[in-house]
Image (cartoon, rainbow, N blue to C red; front, side, top):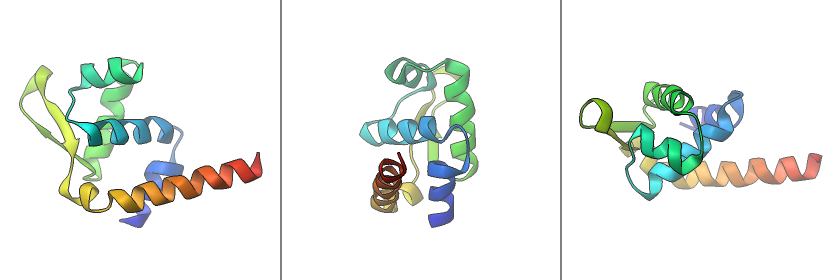
Length: 98
């Protein structure tokens, strides 16, 4: 799980958006359109990141088509504290380098 979380945080160009999506979904379930508005991101960008997060089982969906809601998977919920700790560590390292 740690490797998957590191991929979300550091592994790709879109990691910042994936972090935002995970944190927002932690608050409550959202559909793609709602996430797009809440995070001020393009709908297709959010859809792309949702697809990637689903592929690694960090989020799940409920419902069909347009109104489908996304929420954290049980796996991500269990490891959310680890996710936040790695995020804090990563931010601290970035501050040191800057």
